[in-house]
Length: 172
Image (cartoon, rainbow, N blue to C red; front, side, top):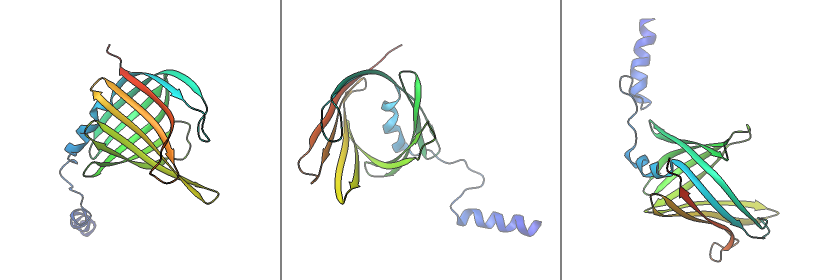
């Protein structure tokens, strides 16, 4: 039994795990704190091959917390929990983000680039041999207002608007 404990004591540092110290939160995760809170959202969707025309109003709530090397948010839309977002710092202005749907579906991983007040969520999909690129761009004009747009492109040069909108923080 003593040999097993000694092996474990030597193995933990080799794995990069500090046995006696809790994980140190990455200071760069603090850049994501503006995302937390309640937001009134007004959205206009356009008719494209990837979206249908509609006007949508909703209340978005991001219940967020930081734990260790992660920043997480339970995101609710109109009172219903929809997705858990898990962010981790990658370096520079990049963060990984994993979306865990509340319905138990498959998690999706991606990236968000946070450069000042602009957050860009790039993505892509390949269907029938053609790659289509997507991006959501959130522009924070201040701590309480976000203008956003969703776009697609086949060449990453010419982007077509799928939707645009505005979110305002709801102060209690």
